Image (cartoon, rainbow, N blue to C red; front, side, top):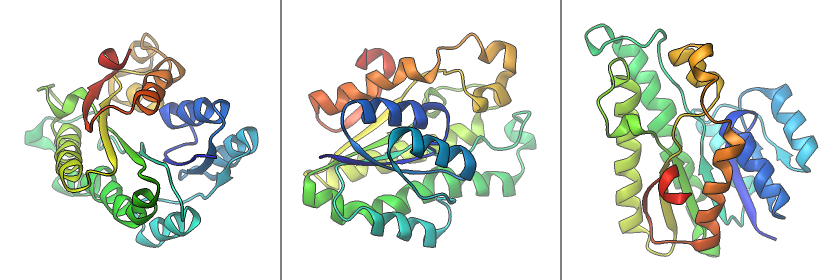
Length: 220
């Protein structure tokens, strides 16, 4: 049985992907900060729940110890930063520092902790990115900068770890709480729900293309 570790798995895309993988027969270890929602998801899917914050090194070590053999790591947990989204001229430096911690350093730390298990199974890593990493959207400078950094880390990791597939994916706008916080609930409600996006990510596992950057449109 293949095993996946998914961060930010209590709601949104993380939960939708967990549901899709469970339906495909995967064994799952799920983590998120929201303990109640995470345990509800794990109970529904027959998964292992390990609540906590991936910015905490001790929590990342607990996760790595729980998955000594790992086929897939999904770095989905992410922060948005201060809202309403500020222009760079007003972006609090401390807010950007916290965002770098959650969106860049935490995924890298978890990759480092789980690489031995991934190498053993010639596994895969999916790092969830955004079009804000490559486009200039007013107000999205801080968030976009962190996703651009995550993409560059992914690109280098792919060169350094040829036996592990590394995919960084822009899933497009989704009907999530994060998008609602960013652009408002009414506009966010017009986006596709995460369960429409999850099958595109599963297609990566079925096809196992070379490491690289993908958008939802390309995968669809």
